[in-house]
Length: 326
Image (cartoon, rainbow, N blue to C red; front, side):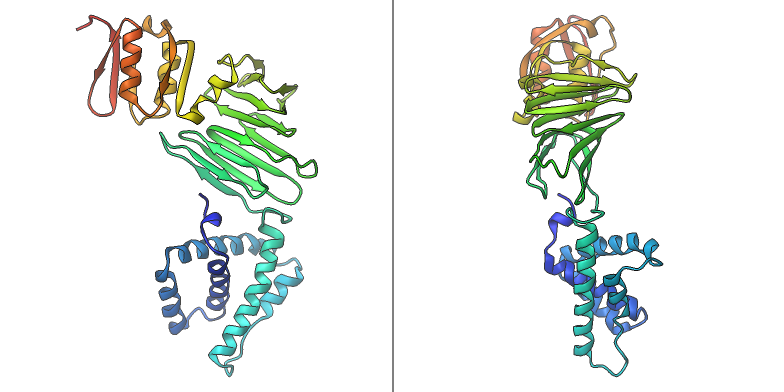
């Protein structure tokens, strides 16, 4: 969950008011004490203030440009004779003005928008409801950066894998960037997996356009394709959509995959190093469906299917050897 999703509008309004109050009188000891008490009253207050401060910092380079609402907010300065209550009314008015500027510029429907980052750790999965009604599901060890504004909707897949259920809007295109590949939605549900040497795309519903550096491809429901670091389109490593998206049900499905590839996939979900010293074993083929949360069960099942044995070396290291090796 992002900071913006986790705080209330009231906390954000109060944070804006505090920002203006402290900028107006940075040396006011009484205000500093009251501000500290407000921060300590609720963890969401700290989150709200960090967000508002980040928005203000972003606007600072624009201070020489004229924004009517922003200029009006900056002109709100209470005099020394005004009562504390009167000051707070003025701060509240300034907060309302600044909030309007923030919504106009930073909201997902604003001119600029405000990027939000989301991530999952190893073994975690998270479903996010986006502001446009679309849904984003993150697989294990994944990081994305979402940037919506009134003109477009854009997601950077920094690492890992994500499944997108997109609410189509021809006036606000939805695109995903992963490495040197851009994926444009044409009203669909699709999976994007950023691997070490390629980006794989699997379409469950609708259509997407994959845009490489010099060539574009269109994928329809039920189709998969990958784009390599050498800037060429190549076949995906899985055969069907159910296999590619099995992680959404907490599963890993392998149909004749090399053992080395299987172990790499298993390693995505667990904070452990799995070694395969014998290169001949790497070429063994694995078939089966496994629960990705159950490391020992997966490895024991693989050892049952193949002539290998599992040897634990400490808490975070596992070695797979040929059966009968001592």
